Length: 567
Ligand code: ARG
Image (cartoon, rainbow, N blue to C red; front, side):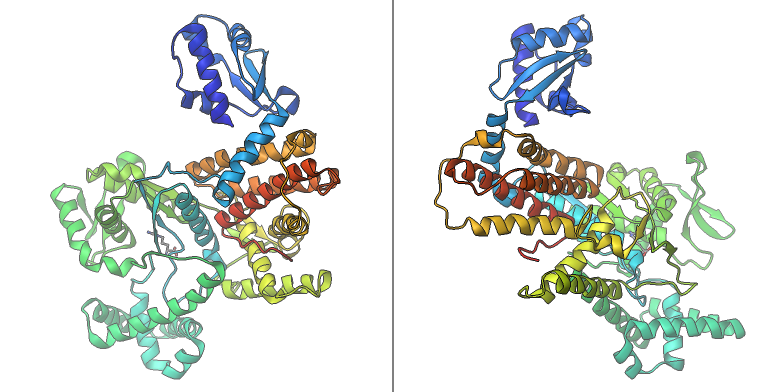
């Protein structure tokens, strides 16, 4: 819609002033949605034309309003703005025409064609259970990936596993001293966590254990067969455990190249940093000084020559650029690592890599539960698998109460329970902290996942009832009322919202957009009878219902939620 209006304005300026002051794209970007409906559906601010045309903005909007020719909208000047009022019937036809043509692909595009985006998300740690602390990175990353795919980009989803560090040496020692294969087989990662805690308790009494841990870590580094076998076993157990969670969430990756993957790619980084004169000695350690950028130095090598988290991230960025020739590489990681990424990106820039500007840290806030912060130390850890299962159970309780005869209800309860968790996670701007509350997340009313899913099933149910009605040419005038128009307007803006979400790395824009569409549909549903005696009217209202269903389904998919047809 925006594009269509922009074209009209573009031609009107060209005709009136005989020049192209702004491109149609620039005009589309300037178009605003006025704060209240009395001011129209779109407003074009004339300020940018003022200098070139040597006239005050209100004059320009007056002139333009006289020259606009359009059958989709009328233009009225108001101050420095030109306000557009869409012609209701034609507007309805236009929106529903594109929905009919595109269906569930509505909003998709090929603006990303030929471009590649790497997304580093979830990035779980070996020998730790998948906790709720990794929910946001997983779901924001998954959603961004789906959005970019939908916009025609090639995406590479990378789970940058935390699979390197001295803790794995300690774990080997602990396992060899206190562990058994049976225990590992039975309890998996849980058993590893216990062994790790035991190691720390014992090491407090006997500090020589730390030395044992270091020895085993060195053995891993040197490729000792026994050490590698155990290390790989721990890794396998963790991945098996996390696979359950990824399956429940519908999340997939193209690569699990984690920190250890870069072992043989460290030398290049060190050599290059040296050759470029960037490496400095600091108490025996090697660092890149970042004083000039107001940051503490970036640690590259420890005294003992061991590489660090940052060194591995530098190697990873170079490798990804070589391998995927990305146009952008996104790191979906909590804001605690803001400084880390700033340092890493700065070092890469200092190394002379122009692509440093294409590295983006997509940062996000913390999650708490019923007002309580999570903490490993205080034993307040919630495992994601437990949380998701509980969400499914609670959803099943609600279904048993509201719709006990529902077919396939276990399956639907899963979609609802998990959808509720995902929605809560992606509801607000990512930088905001989240407080998860069961009664809020699973409420079928208000701004929740189940509410949007329920609205979708409502559309499905209307369409099922109408399945036998023969097709009649729709009468779009039946959609001229306020409720229908509001719904159409929101649907027409969905593609813009998608671009905005991609541009700002902000899935919450889609969450909000689909919630508004769901609310508007419910208002429409109460205001208007959809199945009436008038076939042309019914036909138009059914088209709008189908359009709503398609957009909601697409939006839910892009957020990462399932869209059941009954619940
Ligand atoms: N494993 C890390 C963590 O859980 C996140 C890794 C993020 N990705 C990266 N390339 N540093 O905190």
